[in-house]
Structures are given as C-alpha cells and as structure tokens.
Length: 278
Ligand SMILES: [Fe+2]
Image (cartoon, rainbow, N blue to C red):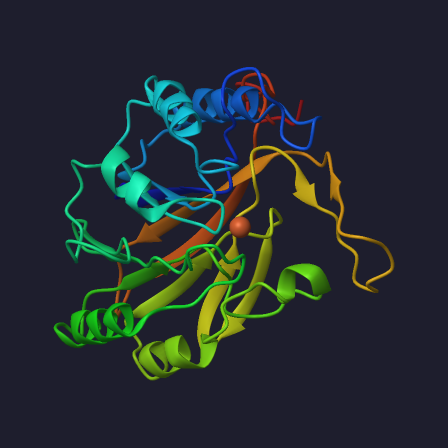
C-alpha cells in the first residue's frame, strides 16, 4: 500500500513565560510537551507540523524564548503562522529559517510538498483579536493558486472564515471572509481551509471547500451555543489534527483525523492467531 502524505496541524499553544499558567489555571507548557511526545510517536511521520497561531499567550520575548525551548525536542519540520495573541515580527524572527512569501508584514508561506501545496496565511491584525487578510496576502494567494491547476492545495490560517455558533468567538473570526471565499471558490485544487482560534474541533464547508478548526492541546472554548454565559473555557480532552492525503485520480483523497493527546497503551488485536475474535 502506498504511504500517505501526513500533515499534522497543531493550534493555539498559548505558551506563557516559565512558571506562569494561562488564566491562572492551565499549564500550557506541559500541554505542549505532551503534544510533542504524541507527535514523535506517529507513523508515518508527518511531512510537516503546521502550527496555526496563538503560539504564545501574550507576545513577550520571554514567552517566545520559552516556546523555542519547549519546541526543541520536536524532531519534525515545523511551520508556524501568527494568531491574535502573537506578534508577527517575533514569529518571523523565531522561525527565521523559513522562506516567507514577503520580507515584511504578513507572515505568509508556501510549502511545496511532494504532490501537495500548503499555503499558510497570516490573518492576524496587530492589537486586535479578530482576523483580516490584507491585500498583499490575498493577491499573493490568488496568484499562487492560479500558477498551477492540478496540484491539490491546503490553506491554513488562524481565524476561521465562518461562524461556529459561539458568539464571543464568532465576533473575532476572519472579518473579510468574503475576500478569501472569492479567491478559493471555483478552484477545485483547494481541498481544505484549516483554521484554529476556537480551541475546538469543527468541520463545515466554506466557499464550496471542506473547512476545519483544529482543537487545542490545552483548554477548550466552552461550547455555549445560546450565548448563555460569559466567555469561558473548559478542560476537555486535548487533541490535534492529522490531515492525511492519499494519491489517486483527480486531486486524490484528503481525510482529517482527530487524535487525542495522552497515553492510551499499545494497539491490541481484535483477533487471535487463528482469526477468531478475542
Ligand atoms: Fe486566537
């Protein structure tokens, strides 16, 4: 069987300076360490790990230095984009080995894997919680997608370009989602729009394209669909996404798996050596 191409997506790490807890309760450093331990056990190994923003909780040098140390054990290629909690220039400096599409401003990136294009878009707006894609980013994405018609492409950004039903998060999603829709709609090579920001697993269709939100390795945003209480988080099972692409006719097949973070023992067979159910 052909080995599929695997892309791990992690999101909303919210790393604090050493010794500090997020919201005085969540040890986000420990959560990232556990996530990295899980990433290192994956087979096949991911071709790349994409971190979709909110890498730190508040964008201090101390927080980014802590993030850098926590990421050291990760023995996989990593590409990161900023979220609303990040400072795009500090992200650019921390991952300075990356080939960014522009020298300044939005931290956009194109990763050309074997048979797959990844476009990482910087939707952060300095000083604001909501997202926006600037004109340079949209023009670059449009030209990049137009440059080729037959390679499947995945688009990553921090802010979801759709609502989730959680009002306080929807107020700070991608404000110009219609501009992104205009670029990806009618381009069949775009197979997925993958976001973060909401700390929950979500799946929908955006501009005719499958779209997901990656859960977080730490706290979840509470699923309050009635806007019944003040914005709140909850200690739900931490998780991340694996986007798995199988070569095939047309654009092949992309599936997204959600993996819980933790230790769950070794795989145990369903059947004995004679094929009888155990
Ligand atoms: Fe965010």
